Length: 270
Image (cartoon, rainbow, N blue to C red; front, top):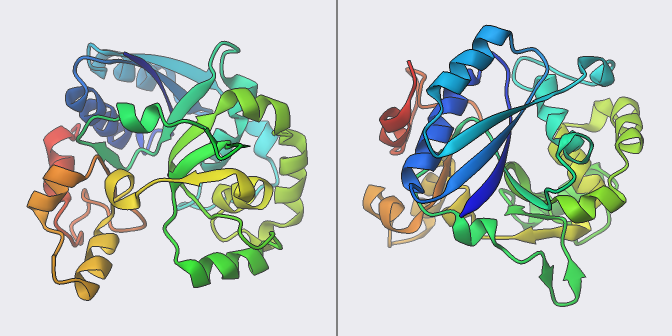
């Protein structure tokens, strides 16, 4: 099966992105992936390194982003402008693409992703724009509604693993309107593009199991504090598909804490 993957990278995240691609292809050896790479600053030698490092069942396709478009938008070392690149999916993706799975660079895939990739966007008479996992409880979701002046019932989805309904997004995603909102409301954007997606499309988010498709060490710690049937490394191997090293707890850092480090080291690129 051929699947479309979307990623957004800069030079700093290049080797972590390659670890993600290696894990994806190794765990899905009978599938082929067209990997669309949103970038605005990669030198040609980085692009060549990526081409030469790609697994045989994946094809890198670079999508060049005009950096000037993001002038005046909030950013930091932790939240660079590349965070906003996925908002340009309808502007830069080929017209024949109807769906794409966005994956952050700090992710390891160790299972079959076809079930997630083929998730039906239509359910109960509703045509969803995104399929993803929520990382917040009901109280924080309500707080985000207040913070972003969104309607009650909107769902806050982690944008690191997100199946995007490109066909429908082309009809409703107004990039200029969103850019204007970002510049005028930078003071309230704590999670940057995730806040923007929540504000504009929080009523069209379809949720899937975060323990299966967006598992972080923090989730394991919180779950094990409340349940007798603990999540351990064996449980992860048998039940999880996508690991996400959220926040500052990265497996390539010396101060990493958790049980998921070995998954990254299987696929890391030096």
